[in-house]
Length: 399
Image 1 (cartoon, one colour):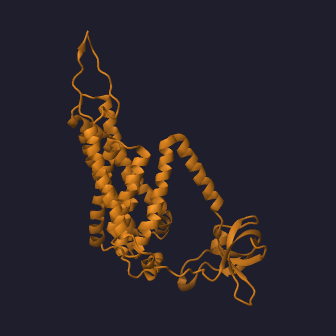
Image 2 (spheres, one colour):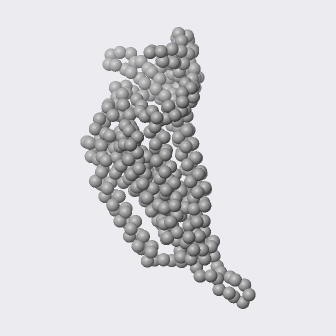
Image 3 (tube, one colour):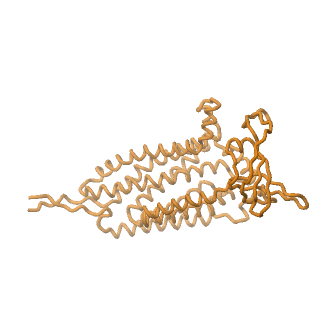
């Protein structure tokens, strides 16, 4: 006498009634989010347009033909006793895309710190007032081809390894950029309610990205519900924390310039909105993983009760929480490496610097995102366990 039962597929037996009910809920959510986009979408006239600081000049591609260093009496001390790079300047000659010769001086920060050699591909600013000879200034290095090659390699690898899911994930990236650039950024500049803009934009992004990358299924829908919970919670606690921590959003020269360009905009609201958007990637990662874990464990152990299923899935969730929290911290440390090095060089206390506006914004953004992430794991797991296939009866005894 032997016990025998077949391991059911991860999606379990068809459940058309539940599938149609969930589809109706998702359609309602999609319509509501699209309606919110329509209401919040700014008119072009409402989006402030700052004057281009290079509006009266031309920016040209050029190739360096000669770089001659010379002593420019750089003592390492600048105006107001601010520290500067000590070393030689350089007289640079380059041939522009128009065939003209550009000659300009490179300061020690650029020359000593980054260097410049013949053959370097750069961009220069051409200043040519009417009736006067053109003058040139260094603008930046050319990086278009390098970035293009990296993007192509990334896309090819994602498509090859991920196949159709990878291909649809790339489409999801395109949709994400479209929503951010065409809706979220203009709406924030036009002083639409920042939290509403962030939540509406994030919801549309997640609706598109999740179903494109992971397919239409009850499992994906459970991950969607967990993600939407994380978005809602992050929005609420982000708005409350921004006010509670007195974050004004003005922590750098760029913030001052942005406020001068769009004086009606609430930079504090933008900080709260950024908390919602910044955590979307990691949030999506953990919710999809938890939903998939529940479905796979149900397939491997179809007789397990819901409590056992939840407990087992949460063991995976705890490991994922730990690694994801590290991811958030490492991501900030990497992007703020220059600031952290400067703090270390000045031998200032990390706690002293952490409470300043610029650093505090990033600290709060990271902590709020981490809190939303941590709470989304048990919520997503509970939703997935509820929507997963019901447990099977014990295997029948066969002779």
